[in-house]
Length: 113
Length: 111
Image 1 (spheres, rainbow over the protein chains, first blue to last red):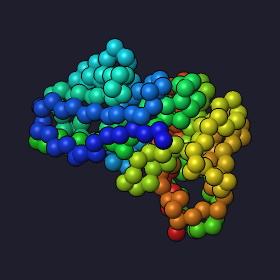
Image 2 (cartoon, each protein chain N blue to C red; image 1 turned 180 degrees about the horizontal axis):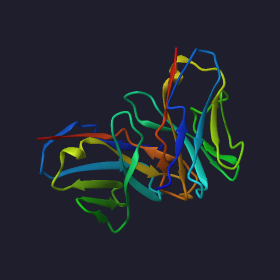
Image 3 (cartoon, rainbow over the protein chains, first blue to last red; image 1 turned 45 degrees about the vertical axis):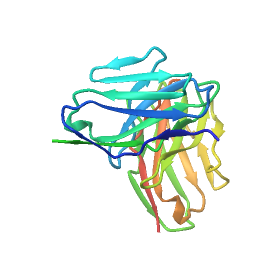
Image 4 (cartoon, rainbow over the protein chains, first blue to last red; image 1 turned 30 degrees about the horizontal axis):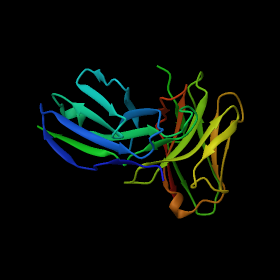
């Protein structure tokens, strides 16, 4: 069974702190990896793709470890507006294109003032 | 900025009725998807659509579900005989290849 596993949290973090989430996936043939952000009762929004070499976008850093089949998201200098659910998403199709994305259940982050 | 649009935003229907959820994907995208999210649960894949046919579907996508691209812009999900457990948020997404962009969703409530 193809799965994506995340710690559901909630992570309660003071404003300005650094927080990290991990996610593991079951299919070693997975080709593409993403972090999405979902606010309450809203659609998932792409936060960043995760590349093999790791990538950074402002305060956000994503890493991929293929050998251990996990991806991570690091948020530095957290803001109140970072409070949301963070979804780990893996494309487990061998072709990587039209196959369905597999979502984790999400990690709930609460930034406290 | 181009976006995926879905209508209606909220649909209430009686059990056993048919509903059609509508989506307009981003115009130059090639792959279209429907997902659903039951309240408090994870986003679940229903079906993917490419080149005017279903390319993959999940076990959730049984005979009561169907998808269509009736014209060059719309992408619809039909649920033939709704059940109470079909109540969920339904998200349409489109992608040029791998990064999916989601519509705002249709909240379906079956009563």
